[in-house]
Length: 100
Image (cartoon, rainbow, N blue to C red; front, side):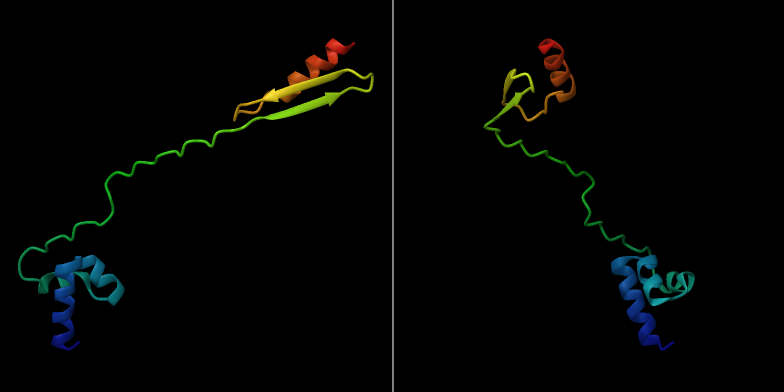
């Protein structure tokens, strides 16, 4: 390879590191490292060491009204103002059992 190519690779290795330069250019890692004069300054990672994940506040729920009517004419009205759904299975089972 021409010396100008090696010099450019050495300059890149000083900036980005030997491995990050040798791998995409398909150069011999050891030969590139030998061509460097002195220690290779490591490029500081642009990735943060810590990322805080902040959960957005849930939107205020206005609520809803749910009405049920059995075949016998019994009625149930549920006014719900929570973001957590109720246990519908047990709620309807209890209503059905109370209607008997």
